[in-house]
Length: 117
Image (tube, rainbow, N blue to C red; front, side):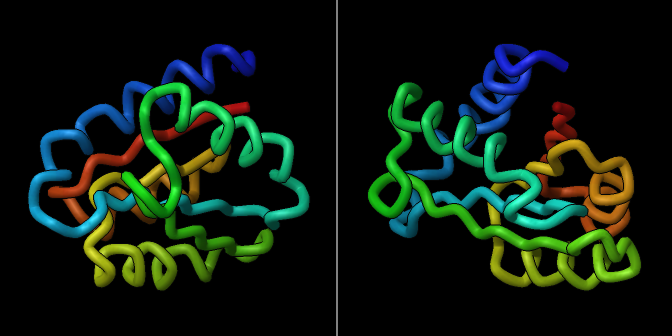
């Protein structure tokens, strides 16, 4: 997937948070990665740059909870469960089918956006 496709998909995944923003607490994006933060730094930076363009400012209008499995897919179910306990509004699973499957297995009520590089 090209960078532009990734950013467009992220924008579409984040938009439903606007409806939930009225509850008083910040809408929260759960970011569930199968790799490490350093290996995905380019993509998380693109994600962070795109959010303000869509009107979402980290810490002001949206919160982001990052969880990384560091290549250990057996950790993904526990990380997904942690995001659910934190009541995130959407889960982004960038470039990781195992992360997307862990999010899907953990909840049917929180939308997951499977993203590819």
